[in-house]
Image (cartoon, rainbow, N blue to C red):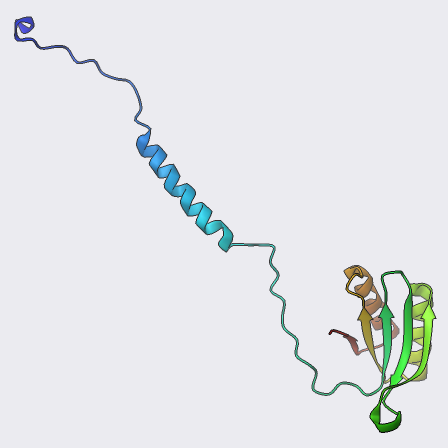
Length: 147
């Protein structure tokens, strides 16, 4: 009897409707694309340093250059009208010689601070090694020169 009425049998489709899944994935993709630039783990938030209130009038200056040469000098404001007067300046061929000269300056005047002027092309490790060796000698005040 069913054939007389024109009814057809429905076939069941065994397919998964993927359109809602694609919509969800596109929304998640947009969320991650927007949120990714907000988190940058490689950025270092460096502290700001103001000028010291009382810079030392007399100090030992170490100048490091990228050509592996260094100079050490004793600077004093004992000149005329408070103008810096370099009492002595010596070149050091390597770090061992530099530390030997620094030890001589420190033994002569142990109260002096050290000002380290390093070229911006210098390796960070080299600068830290000089600071560490100055601390081992017994120098408590070591500062870094900036522009």
